[in-house]
Image (tube, rainbow, N blue to C red; front, top):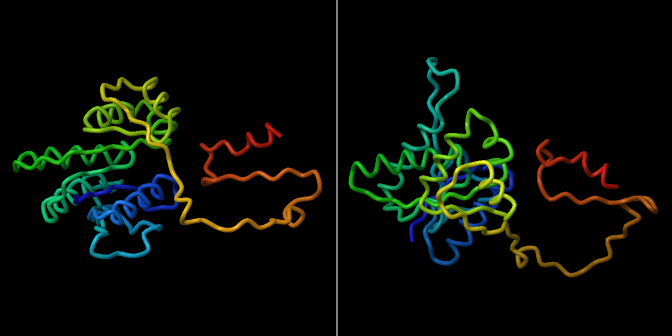
Length: 220
């Protein structure tokens, strides 16, 4: 298949998962096209199975905030038509599923149908979704997706509690490629990292406020 993936290109979990998923799909013989404003940080090599298409947002004095969703939807239309894309997979309802829906409607005007899979990540619900200003757009984008997945059961339940969702949400947990990080066991020498009796906390994510890092102190 020819698959277009839309994600944030940063070190955040959603961008990493989306990129690693695309690489794995390419290794299985699919043709993967990443569409975003910068090459994803985990996308080290491009080849005849993995492509990157940069979304350019022109600067106009009229706009206080440049319309990324408009630029993204237009880029998706061009990419889908030029490369005969079979499937669109977007990570985050806002702004990506919203832009994907607009691209779908524009393509339908030309007799082109493209199914869209939307994968929900934490910020969709914990921050964006709870804001009254964005809630209708998030609700709409999820319901207009052909397939909806979530990266955890708790995120699925949170989505169903906050929004009026008509679609079925399938849970596909975040993953780690254990073969990629396979190493032999070594004694880490705990004394080099902490004093005797001092606890060591490991955090696998970024240190944004939504991760509630200060709660580590409360639990110790």
